[in-house]
Length: 285
Ligand code: PAF
Image 1: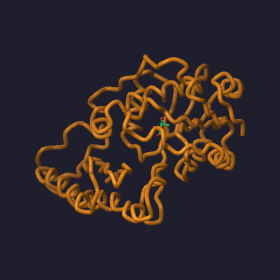
Image 2 (image 1 turned 60 degrees about the vertical axis):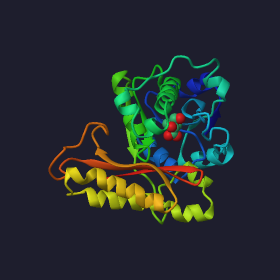
Image 3 (image 1 turned 30 degrees about the vertical axis):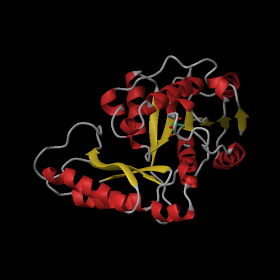
């Protein structure tokens, strides 16, 4: 596996290929990332991953400085997984000057849920993903990029960006991988103390319970079910941002106002803080 730090070196290593398979990450890789790399590598003629902790998607009070940087261990895992090229640019390489041109995804999708609680988050994500796509795919007739479904809304934002800018890139998604107790794997799980780690699975338990309660319930009862799910987590010491049932198709258009729920594909999404760590998860129902 080649490890490259500049856009020029990356492009040179990819020059002989026509369909790169790309897995962008912020590092501190877990089994979910590795599964994505393995899945993606079957879909392209060269497999590329990037590790870049993107300042643009962190608010000033968030964990940009403390985000775990574990390049050597990550590189080992990527090599074992069959990755051919690792692109690990320094900040000055990707942002040699302040990034004043940015992608502003449609507010109906980007300013709800994660975007509501992390204003500007999807501007930062879309901007860096477009730039990384340009580094990897410029001049290629086609390509594939892989994202994990744990970041459900992120995948949707990126899919729409690819569609709106007519990028010749197929977006592939990987299922959320879970620990034995059901906790969704996340780079941020390493922040949890042992007691918090034992408690953390309660987010996915709460989403499962909300999903079961919502299926077949009357639409008019949904708000109360969502509020009860949030209160139950809060009673355990969490600070929930949202636990909500949305249409899988777009996450923002309103559910039917009457009749039973569950007549169209739905997804339960949640975000909550446990101690200092904010966790997200979702479940298609
Ligand atoms: O999901 C992530 O790790 C990041 O949001 C991404 C897509 C690598 C952009 O920085």
